[in-house]
Each structure stands twice: as structure tokens, then as C-alpha cells.
Image (tube, rainbow, N blue to C red):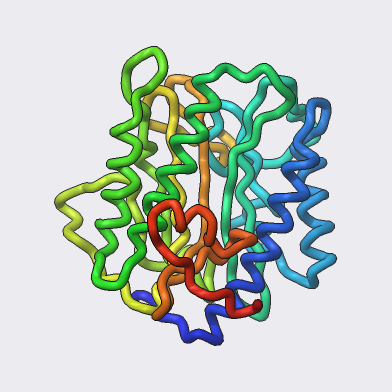
Length: 278
């Protein structure tokens, strides 16, 4: 069953989403050469405390940290550690969440550590982020879940990959419903798998965490011995972007974007729903 939210509940999720946005801003500033991924986790903990919010990653299924810090070939679920020191030229995907009054927010971004990054890495992150926004733009009344998947995949497939070949759309992980839990039905693929059908209709109150993960090579992954860290099987680097989005009567509201998605959705000719906290 898909959990449909009331406007009041969406407002609570917006509160949680703005805490996530604050964590993103603080960790992005702290993701510099010489910092450890454990340092970034401490930054996130401080932001959560300042907003009187709870972490939704810490303890989830036994996960030992507040955020996921996935460096280079790590796709998702990297565990913060004093042993992982960021270097000039690295890329890092930071995935984090927050809970306010029992309602969840969840979002991720890819950052560039230092300078001098290969243009193909910059393009990888751009393609991944823009495919997320294509999926968000497909959050329309009357559409179905598969339309979001199709929008994400279509965008990625249409982008020429520097040096040739194709981008790898990660197959084993995808987006999800979100609300009173971080991960809820429905599961959202980042590509179209015909045997799954069209999925549920998108109606007001429908909330999704839309999160494409894309690699420079394979779509296949493996989990390391810590039972969390997911890497590409060919060692190619990857990018991960995510926003939590609510569909309202007035259109989509990007719960974890500071402006509610207003600027990016305008590029698609879509007016973002009014911010319930404004």
C-alpha cells in the first residue's frame, strides 16, 4: 500500500527536508582534501542537533553512522570512517536524512573534492543530477510510477558519454516511497522493466525519494565484507543524486530543496507547488 499524505503531513516532511538541505550545505563545505568521512558525519550530527531533529540512517538495519559517505567507486552506503581521508580529485556522494515529529526527509548529492577533476566526472555528476530532475518533472497527476522511471532512463540514455560507450544505470538500488518511514512502497527503478507493469497512479499526497545512481561503466554492483558498502564491480566511479518529492494538488514540491524545486522545475515549464512553510 502506498501511503498518501495530507497537506499537514507534507508540511512536516518539508520541515524534515529543510534539515536535510542544511546537512547538505554543511557537509559540502566540509568535504575538502584532508577531511575524513568521519569528520563529515560529525558535521551532520551537529546540524541535526541544532534543528532538534533525529537521524534516520543511524541504526537503520544496524547502520553505524548518521550519513552515508560514498567515495569514487563506492555507489551507496559507504560508512564514515577516520581511515577514509578525502584527496584532491576525489568525488563523494553524501546521502543523509532527518526525522521531524515522525516524518522523514532523505536526499543525496555528489560533490567534487578539491580541483582538477576529469571532465568525464563532471559530466557524470551532471547527467545523474539532471536525470533526477527529469524524474521529478514526471511527478504529475495522471502519470504512473513507470513514467518517472522512464524519464530518468530516457535522459541518461540520450546523453553522449565522453570517450564513447554507455553510462551504467545501477540496477540493484533505486528510489522509494517516503513518509512515516524512510523506505516505503513503492520501489522506484531508474529504468523501465516491462515485466513490472506501470505501477500505481500518481495522485496528490504521493511522496517519492527519487534517486538515480549512475556509473562510468557497469550497472552491476557488489557489497563489501562490512555488509553495507556497495561498489561497482568494475571499479568505475559513480554518482548519486536524490531528492524527496511530494505531489500536491498544485504540483510537485521538492521537499529537500531549499527553494522547493522552483528554479529547476521552471526549466521544464513546471510551477513548483507553494511552500507550506513560507
